[in-house]
Length: 245
Image (tube, rainbow, N blue to C red):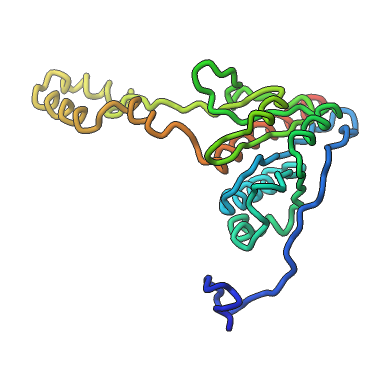
């Protein structure tokens, strides 16, 4: 009976019957009226995130990092399901999730109310995007993440005041750190033909690290969302701290 109630998912002998969670309807974020010097709030907006694992992971990150709220597209998005709840590690039960049937209009009205909209982007050639480590948060901000496969819809992009990207870090020398290379030179290993042959064979086997990196050109949306949220919230907290000084 428990297996049927749990849909044949692991239950450890316990199943809790509960009413489904519903999104709270939201048409626009109101103007921020916090006290002078307070940290600008950061909201997370999800444009048609469809994987319940990603939905849950993003809710978990938003709750842990201290986002002021989460807004989702009510259409073509993952539901607040048991799978999303499990992926959220319980955060879905603690953090209200707001929904809108027209995310474009909601963002447009929120901008009129003083909110800045920042869209997550790939940061490819010709695309003007702020590197994540340079992000500032000097105004109430909405971070928008697009669909796992298609990214943000065009109309959503048009409502963005800026775009942010997470640059990839090219690896350093794949064989020696600076200290190891200096030690090798001191020991005269660079003149050892046998070692040179070994390094050459390793290079041939490993290939070009930069070229290999290009085969995976992006992060999972839940990982990218957590990184960008952290940067924005840290910048917001730093601004509040400097204002207090």
